[in-house]
Every structure is written in structure tokens, then in C-alpha cells.
Amino acid sequence: METLAGKGLTVPWLDVLIAAIAIHDGTRLYAIDAHFEEISKHAGLLLYRPGYGGSFNPGDEA
Image 1 (cartoon, rainbow, N blue to C red):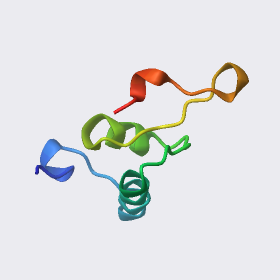
Image 2: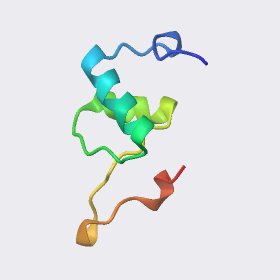
Image 3: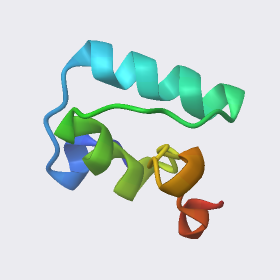
Image 4: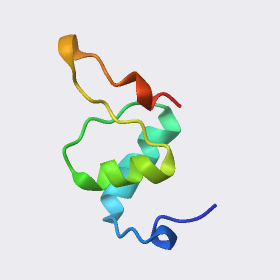
């Protein structure tokens, strides 16, 4: 498994920890931090994107 650093991403360790817990538990993460957007592109993190009625973007389903 390639690491985030191996993909050229420098992410604070606390953001990695939060993302790892969310991935492990299979929960969506709501965050405005751009690091989580980058992690979601490379590590399977599902982000909650509020929409009409509080829905989420179904295109993020794994």
C-alpha cells in the first residue's frame, strides 16, 4: 500500500488520525479542511457533502 507521503501529500498527523478512524469505522466525515479532500482522493475516505435536505453526494459511495 502506498503512503500519502509517497503520493506527494503532506498532511498533519492529526488529520491522518481522524481520517483513519473514519475509514476504519466506515463513517462519513464532515470537514472544511482541504487536507481531508486530498485524503479522500487517495485513501477511500468518504466525505459528507451537505445538499438539499442534508443529503450527501452519492457519487462518493465506495
